[in-house]
Length: 212
Length: 100
Image 1 (cartoon, helix red, strand yellow):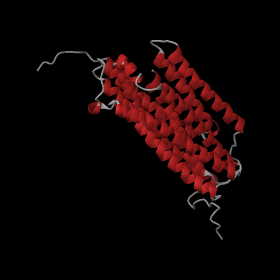
Image 2 (cartoon, helix red, strand yellow):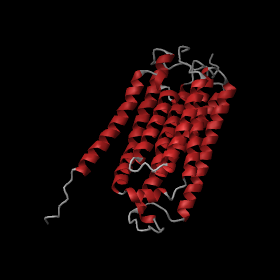
Image 3 (tube, chains in turn red, cyan):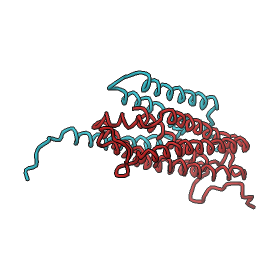
Image 4 (spheres, chains in turn yellow, blue):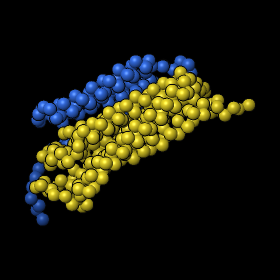
């Protein structure tokens, strides 16, 4: 009876619509906890930035804003292709949905490669968090604090990018099997929301760490 | 479920170009002009506009059930509360030498 490709909503839901809305709301509540987690880091950053503005300004000079801007464009593009992936599932275009999801994963990979070059450059220069800092502080005694924030915030964000790439690969495989259509695409929507949040966090990280 | 709102592709493309434009604006205002001491405020404000666009369109909040809006606004509110109370604490401390 079951073809494996048709989704039947679970029995504790009134309808497929009810299941979809509940699942999506669950994702939103999860995203709330994500914002609280990153929010703590952002508040800490703002407080210390206010206390040592010159030191933070000097620390930001160690980053290449061009690479940060490039990664911003890469992530914004991936958000667009993600939303297109959801859109093509909604209109039953399997081929284009899979293609857009693949581009999204590729953008995530580009982001991580750029991040790898940035990290290795800083690690070689000894610009590391707290006690591991070995570079010249140029008179800014607490410069290691800047790199604590830098590595903690971008590192946590980078883990989210990797997790997002795995999740998108999962929905890509399912989309390729033809599991999604106009009546059922909940996993793509949920993963999409997560991916956009990752993009959203980078939108704030880029100017705060690289520019200000 | 055919009642789901399918947003026209043109809308997503417009939002995308707006986001790219605002990214360029962030770089220009931070690198090209010296708005000291408003550099941080300007960068944060532009980022907020970008975040709003992402949430409203890419995350479909504009077309979504209102409950999801309130859920996400509540998280921003609590981050704001954390910020306010930390600032109040640090801003109202009176420096004094230890009496020990």
